[in-house]
Every structure is written in structure tokens, then in C-alpha cells.
Amino acid sequence: MPTPQEILEELKKVKYPGFSRDIVSFGLIRDIQVGYSGVTVYVRNPSSNEEVVATIAREIERSVGAMAGVEQVRVEILGPDPNEQARRAIQSQRRKPENVRHVVAVASGKGGVGKSTVAVNLALAFAALGWRTGLMDADVYGPSLALMVGGKQPVTLTAQKRIVPLERYGIRYVSMALFIDDERPVIWRGPMVAKLENEFLFNVEWGELDCLVLDLPPGTGDAQLTITQRVALDGGIIVTTPQELALLDVRRGVTMFKQVGVPVLGVVENMSYYTCRNCGSRHQIFGQGGGARMAREMNLTLLGELPIVSELREGADRARPLVAVNPTHPASIVFRQIAAKIRAQLDPTLFARVETGSSAD
Ligand SMILES: Nc1ncnc2c1ncn2[C@@H]1O[C@H](COP(=O)(O)OP(=O)(O)OP(=O)(O)O)[C@@H](O)[C@H]1O
Ligand SMILES: [Mg+2]
Image 1 (cartoon, rainbow, N blue to C red):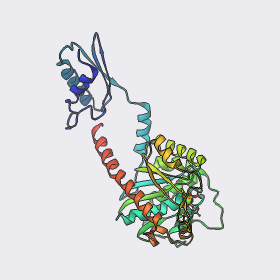
Image 2: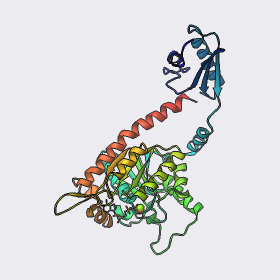
Image 3: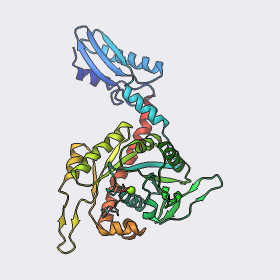
């Protein structure tokens, strides 16, 4: 009798009908059991097409049956995984704004960790990489992003009543702040918020974009989930500060993205250290290496560690974001490195999705 490993090797020669790839590399084989009564191969339900399923089962029986010592082969087709089904149902409802290639969301477990600062400067770093970049503030309750990029300006609509994004420093952006009266407190209810966000995302005339950066509201509650369930995100970026408490919040962020099947591209540790102006040495006032440790433990990529620099705050206050106005600043360099690390993850993701999308169903 062959061993399960030998059988698996043999199954690598069985091609998925109509594809050059084999059924093992497609992840269809879930288990192989070798017993006195023969071999049982457990197969993940590969397709809704019965003919494809029958062909695969027949091919497995034929190839394993031809191995020396095998007298009987049974193929068990397993039903779809309920979690997988739920994820697919969510994913099938998701869409991307028209002409937008990638959408990434910047999230944080709690407020004030520098999420908007990261979103703005990251968008500018993408633009520096040559990407046509958009930036959107999905934070109804604390909109600040537009002010960080270009101050408050009137918004215009196209003849089709679509929102024309503002443009500055080579990026296109819109923000809730542009539609809200400063004097009026924001006390909208959930459904109104969801509706507004929907308007925003899908009613903006973005034009062709390589990447749209979404600044999510702080936290991992309903508002964030609504967006992650509605927009076909290519990835999530989590911003944190080095305090232990913030690291706990990161876990919630990761769980949120995982729940909806969005890959986490990595973690940005903000306000990691402070470089003394006088002596030039680094001071890690919140403790050292927390982000790296957490990234390791949670199997996440540490995208970058950003220092505390007054220019980042001043730039945000005066709509002069650091990456745009001072591209050689050490923090700007970190932002461009983060952008490059994200870019390295984005294209394969999209490619993989296209490939699996055309194969299993
Ligand atoms: N690395 C940094 N160095 C210095 N100041 C920073 C840094 N990162 C953020 N800040 C400042 O900290 C404050 C909070 O940052 P920001 O508004 O980006 O956080 P946020 O997570 O978006 O907050 P909110 O939850 O309110 O949306 C701002 O004044 C910002 O300019
Ligand atoms: Mg913010």
C-alpha cells in the first residue's frame, strides 16, 4: 500500500479540468486515508458544475487505483465550508468605485494614534511612486483629512450629480468635512452614516486611480464593518502606537479584517521614538520594539516605525503634509518605504484573486 504522501504526489499529476494546474496546487485535497479496505481521498467541493466534480472524482480514482497495492479508491466530496460560504457571500456584495484598481483602508483600534496622518502621507508616498492616488475620509464623526491636505474648499458636482474630488499635491481627495457645517455637531445615526459613506465612495468621480486610500473611523465597530463589507478592499493597514494598550487594539483591527476576508498588509507603528535635537540620539519613550514583537507574534508585516516629529503635526495643521513639502525628511523616507512595501503586496493579491476566481467556480 502507498503512503498518503505518495498518493498526494501521484495526485499532483491530475489536472483541474480545463486548466494546466493540478488539483493539489488548487488546494482541493483535504485528507487522504489509507486503510485495509482501500484509500479514501477527501476533496473540497471544487465547483458548482457537476460534470467538473465527476471528472475530478473519476481522475482521482483512476490515478490512485493504478498505484501498486491499491485495490479500492473512494472519493468523498466535502460540502462547502460554512465560514468560507459566509465570506464569499460578503465578498460577492462588495464592489470597487469605478476605474479604481486598488482600495486600501487605514484603520486603528482607537482614536488619536495618527491614522489620518498616516493615510495622508501614505497617499502622497503612493503618488511619489507614480501612482494616480485618491484619498477619502470615511470618518463621519471626526473629519479632519481634507483640512490636513488642502483646507476647506467648495465641492463641485458633475452634470450627473457626482462629486468632483479636490486635487492638491498630485492626489485627489474628498472628505466628509467638505459637506459638514463646522458649527453643527455630527449626531447622525448608523443608517444615515452608512448612506453617506455609500454616496461618498461610489458617487465620487475619481477618474482612473491606481490606488484609493480610505481613512477609516477609529475603532473596529459597526461603522468600520459596514465599510469593509461594502467596499472590495485589497488590504488593510493598521496604525498603532507603542503602548501595550494600543497593541491590544491592533488585535481587534486584525480580527475585523480577517472576519471579512480582507488581507492585513501590515502594521505601522507611529510615534515610535523621538530623536533628540541636541544630542541626535533616539528616545523610545513608550518602550522599545513593541510593534516588531507584536508583528512577529501575530504574523503581521511591520511596515514601518515613524518617529515623533513636530513637522508632521505642523504640516497637518497647516495643510502642508510632510511627504509633499519635505520629501527628504527622514519621516518622509519611512513613508515611501511603507508605500513600497504595500505596493509589493498589492499586485500579487489582485493577481491571485483573478486566478482563483476563474478556477474554482
Ligand atoms: N509621528 C507623529 N509625530 C508628531 N505628531 C504626530 C505624529 N503622528 C500624529 N501626530 C499628531 O497627533 C495628532 C493625532 O493624529 P491624527 O489626527 O493623524 O490621528 P487619528 O488617529 O487620525 O485621530 P482620530 O482618531 O481623531 O481620527 C495630530 O495632531 C497629529 O498631527
Ligand atoms: Mg483621523
